Image (tube, rainbow, N blue to C red; front, top):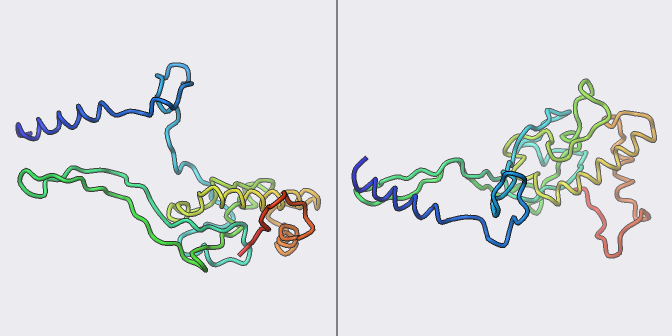
Length: 199
């Protein structure tokens, strides 16, 4: 490493060591953790279920069994930041692995199929998974958002209740009856609650 590169690296390292978490956050660390250190690592994607169907960026809009609506763009975080000397003495940072693409579907919203929230019947018959759902990385980038997850939770909770009442597996829940129950205008609503929409 040249002397200039070494000096620049030391300056950058010294500046980076002055960075930290906000001093008004994270006052209650886990045992052994320092104050003001974020106690949880952000893991956007970990294990996901290989379910009844797999949702991908190609097929989120192709379903008659809508459990939820996704409207966030397809995106992926930057994986690596690389310092690059593009000409002698001039450096820049190249970010590798990040991208953002607009969502498809009507009004930039896409149907999320109920089948991605259920395991294969051969694996389990009394479970739905609303976050670690059966999705590719591309589809997960859109479906992971809170509003989509909340709507999926309501749909799959209703499906579970109907399956339990009928003594059947959640995979055998009749979607037409499920949709009617979810959209029933006579169903209890919170004051000011927006009526649900499924596509």
